[in-house]
Length: 276
Image (tube, rainbow, N blue to C red; front, top):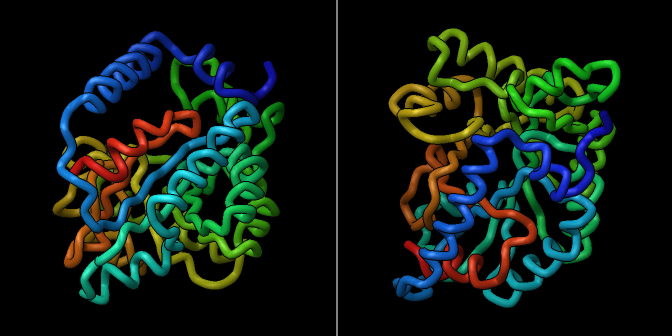
């Protein structure tokens, strides 16, 4: 079995539950886009992706052009600095990120980001970085349990190339762990192990953390895990809760909007301009 290389393969190899979730997502997004929005208020938005496959390149470039027309790009460090400053967020800003560490993001997303002058954060699950689809087949198939989606992950050289291009490389735990299933000591181990590995491979400090799955009360404990991240030396904690960021919001509960690179413009308009 070859690694997934297109969105068609990614969706085609999904299990029944994943296909159902994808169908429900499309239906929900289409329905919500028909509802009246609340106006295009100033805000900082954090769109995030998991993959940009070969057949998503054109869609991703289109989305970056759309964001450029409707606001400004901020890098992750600059976005966190703005949140910490307490200054009013008086414009529309987009801060992009990518979860997991799939190689398609380094291969396809990076050159498009550079072309459009957009900085981004890449959150990697360190145990999977540098794996080989043939040698580590069982480990990689376990990333999506019960499915046949074999994913190719970045190498550490890919991560260094991201950093050299001005991108942030942050932690997504070591094992892509569900924090809510772990005790506090195990959470700290996941966060410190991944942080240490990134720092050893890339040099400098790893300051930012993104929680796998990122749903409070379900996949992480909001009263515990952001605090542990701060104690481990991180400066931010990203979730998958949708919505805008306003002045005074905490960098240890960053709301982000899940985006697929082929999502149409009307969905971007609905969720990055009008909702919230």
